[in-house]
Image (cartoon, rainbow, N blue to C red):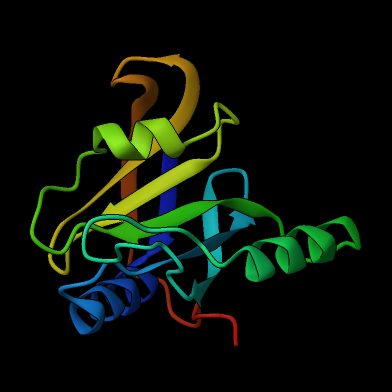
Length: 143
């Protein structure tokens, strides 16, 4: 599997990560068939935003409801590791459902994509996937 997203979207996400540092940034990825068409930055409501992230449940529920009403499909999540690598942490693995959604991890400079799986190769939860960053115009964040 691979995750395809435009270089414009990736740069917007990296900028959000840089702005949020030293806290973790997070949000939702929308698209279909492994291609990100848009994203929504959400508030990080984790108790310790310096070391963890939690997508605001109100945004997640609203996106799930919209998806059921033929809105954009949620293909995954993004979050940042401001002072770390773009590999999932043990905490990420503990928080992830084995729902096959994508986890894009960024750090303001680098990025990597992972699929949340039952019995994944990394911490029993994630499998690495290819990240294909294309120079595609016109793809931006959802408001």
